[in-house]
Length: 286
Image 1 (cartoon, rainbow, N blue to C red):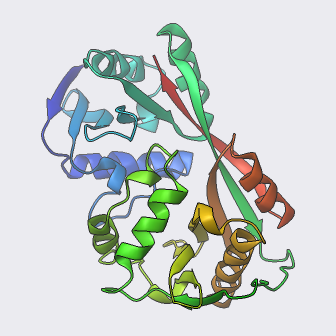
Image 2 (tube, helix red, strand yellow; image 1 turned 120 degrees about the vertical axis):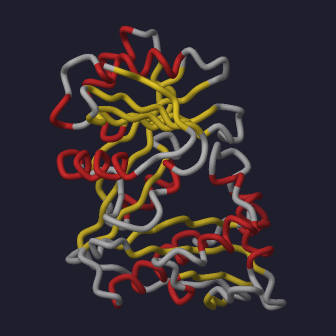
């Protein structure tokens, strides 16, 4: 087996990711177009056996807000159980930098490698889902607050400012920039009609709910953020509900969201609305 770093991912990587998704349910990759953002840029580690790509690791060298480079690692389903994942992890761990390695759906093989290589389980990201047969109350807005939709070319700065304050503790979301938002506006799934802003009587943005519809027609509570100065009075719940009602009018088959397992207030809100945990993604770190 040959393991080597590459500057770019070729189409064989897409084929491997699609094969993994057929078995694992992740990653969210399509047959054409750009690869998912977690596989763009950075460094690419490819494992070949007799000319066939059997394993792949991507390292996001830009990293998170805490200085960790982020690692995504996938072994082709037809070549698992042969030590390929361990070999890729060993090569990645030679990087002289803090690293976080993601295991989607808390894969038992990843857990075994983590134990053997002394990696700690440092973060759990829950995927929660809501069936369409769960009834939803109407959103209730406190006095002085109304909701409108996002206007591209106008609202990026205000939304990013709220996001930065709301997620100053978050390793990824707090890094969102206006350029990131404008780049996402070019993604095929972007829909300003599903991007809701809570504003005060001066039209100052105090919170938002950005929804997403996936290619498999699953809706997502992509991100909900409330300015800390505007928290309380159920604003986060109201924003969540207005997005959920919108997604149902779009005819989504169900709705998902991702939330940190230790964000107990958010987990409690989503549980009260009827969301249930479907699986857990785990980040490991030495």
